[in-house]
Image (cartoon, rainbow, N blue to C red; front, side, top):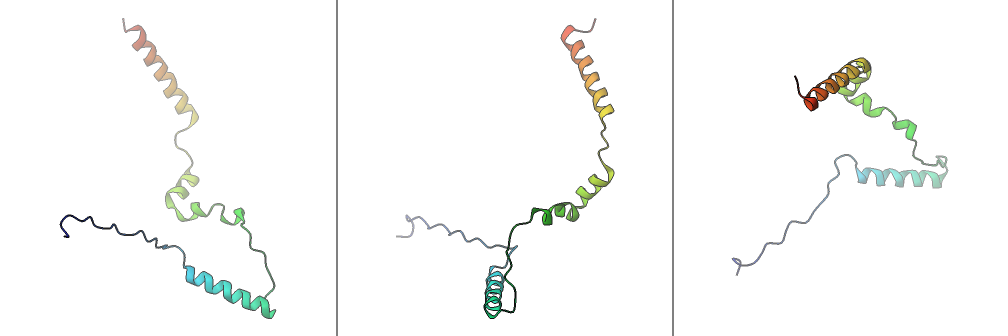
Length: 97
């Protein structure tokens, strides 16, 4: 009876939208065949962190503006605000007379 049976949940299927695995596999196969035929020199693949340094900044306009303009909230303003909060705290603790 279908009324009292529980449904089987949908299985999770991950779809990667940023990489094309079939293209990567095909490219590795082509590179391997070229290496076997001696057309392409063998190259070591390694991760180079300097290659990706700063790329996030290039693609986000908000981060670019922040880097160009710098911080508008400087140290002198922060010190004045802290000083004003300390004075306010003192008056709250002792009571205004």
